[in-house]
Length: 299
Image (cartoon, rainbow, N blue to C red; front, side, top):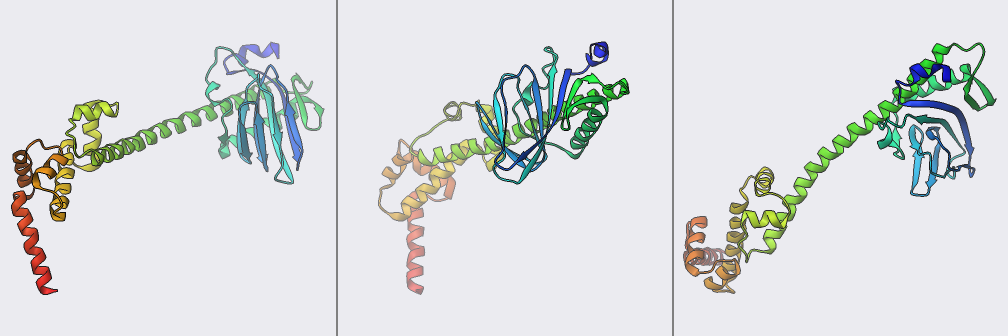
C-alpha cells in the first residue's frame, strides 16, 4: 500500500488493514482486546449485544458502530439463531477529526450506505489474499488485482464514513432544534406553575428572568409565543381569577383577599379588580348573590 499513499492521503483513511465476515451463532461471543486501529462493525442480519468498558448496546440488523482503538469489547448473540456481521479494521490520519464524533455511536444505515458495504466486500474479495474464507488481508493485493479497484474501494469506504458523519450531524441539528422547541415549552410551563404558586408575590419580569436564568427579553418573547399574553398581564389575570374564586367562597374579607394576592392596600386591590371585571369587589359579590338567589328561586 505504500506505493499508493499519494492518493490515499486525500481521504480520511490512512490504511485499511483487513475485512472480516463474522457469523455469530446463538450464545456465541466475539471478543476483541485493545488494538492500535479503529474497527467499523456492521450488523448485516440478526442482532447482537455489544459490551464495552463504558457501555452496553443492542445492535440490530442494518445498524453499525465504529469502535476506538483503545477499547476492549465483546459481541454476544444471545437472542437469535445466527447474526452476520462485517468488520473493517482501519486507521485515520491524525489530522482528520471528521469521524471522531461518531466513534462509539450507533448508526442506522441507509440503503445507499448498505450498498456501499456490499461493494466494499465484493472488491475486497476480488483484490486481496484471503487469510480464510471470511477474512481478508487488505495490505496484500492479488497479482491480478487492478490498483484502480483498490482506489475505488477506499473511496467507497471514505464515502461510507463521511455519510455516517453527515447523517449524525444532521440528526444532531434536528435534535437541538427540537430540544430548543421543547425547552421553550418546558420553561413556559415552569413559569406558569411558579406564578400559580406565588400569587401572593409581585415578581417583575426581571425577577422572573433571573429566577429562570434567562434574559428579560427572552422570557417575554417565549411567554408571549406560547400563551398569547404578556407575562405581567397573565400574572395579573391569575390573581384576578383567584380573587373571583375567593370572593365567591365568602371565607375572607376583601382586605385579606387583596393581601393574599400581593396587594398592599384594599384600594389598590379594588381598583385592579374593577378594571378586570368592570365591578368593584363588593358589587361583584352582590351580583354573585343575586345570581344564586335566582338559581335557588327557579330550582
